[in-house]
Length: 60
Image 1: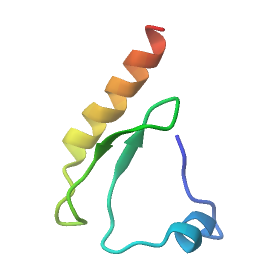
Image 2: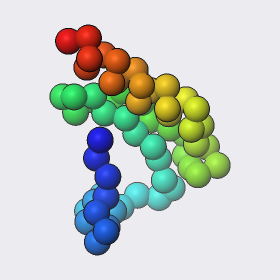
Image 3: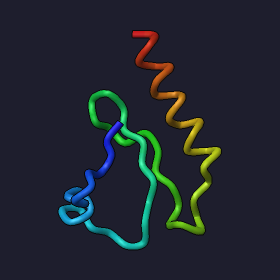
Image 4: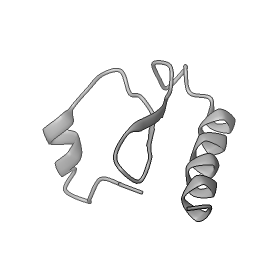
């Protein structure tokens, strides 16, 4: 899982608006991207996408 640090380095480098939620697999491929947010976020869908990546990695 990748998160921004307290100095917002990722935000500064990859700044985008409106916000989006992404899930990447172990090799860095995008497996999920949300609609434009925050109003387009579906956190239940995002959670399922995260769980799917972890489940796939555990089955390797």
